[in-house]
Length: 444
Image (cartoon, rainbow, N blue to C red; front, side, top):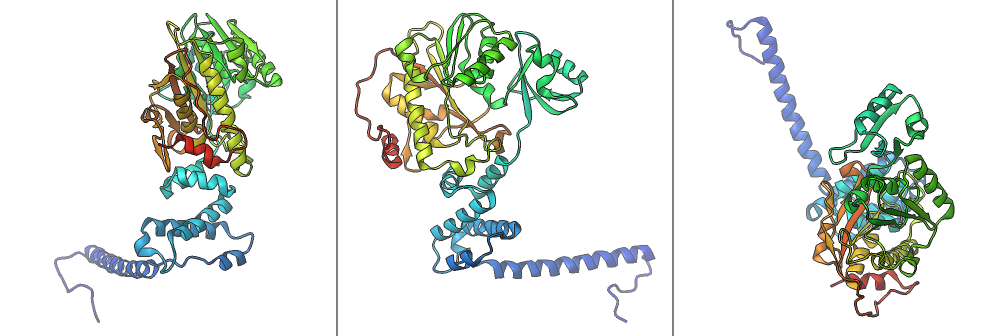
């Protein structure tokens, strides 16, 4: 009878069995490696489905098989020369990948194309898309005009909440893991000791860094959380103008500021573009958290996946450019303590962020400065065919899959002069122009 081991009287029976098992494991490992090499050789070239094959695929295709094809196509694109099918171009693979991603995650092709341009590395794109479907942690901001974070945390823990400091970079944020009581209905909430607020909305106020006794404008203030934060940093001194173009949302601002104990605020209901006419060069600092596409907070509103198209985005950054012009014209460059504008959006699209900031740098005497924020990814200086001012690297981007907060953008701008630059016709500025014409103005 054949034996794996020669007779060895020096080995105990248990040791012989152990040696047999080790030898068998080595043989199995070798066979597995050989089989793996065969599989790799067989899969080096991936068959890309034709248009007809995709069309004949059942409408309710298995998501698992769809996910598998997404992974396989991404692997081919990662090693295109070796794994591509002869006669098939990269653009064909990208087109199949885009359609599969749209089907799997529920986006329209326009928005998916924008995200694929933003995250050219496939693994990061998938991480971003997955993060968009995940709810962010519930976070609250301590109202330092009434309490301290440690005292608030102890009080809420006694109420049945499980809370912790939200992050190292904020001294007022708390994250709520679970709660036995409604977070927005505790005695502490009703007394104004805290407000429900995403961590991302703390960032622009921190960058603005308002000082006591200044005159500050929150141009798009509703629902008032950032205004309350500004008032707290100003220690309830000076004047904060909390403005919103929507009257119903303005009423919500009034209620929140009353609850938080803010008594240095004036609530107004104006189109932000009107401020240079009613209060020209009247502010030390302005926060413009501009209306945007909401592509950084898709988990809150899944309708964004299908409702954002080329025309919709164009209308939004047209308004954003008008608002940022109005904001910079409303700041006093001669302010002894200020002269700053913070521009922010809850969008990750370049058209609404770097392109808007680059536009104001061309139209007014101003420059970008450090935000002073500890976290964040540098803004784009070069993005595809666009070439922005080198100082755009001072802006900060935030992604849900990187920072575990909503997608966000923050830029801090210093106004240098109250004099306007010479007015030049800016190509593509009129409403209704095609996006390609509008994008051309920010190219080198």
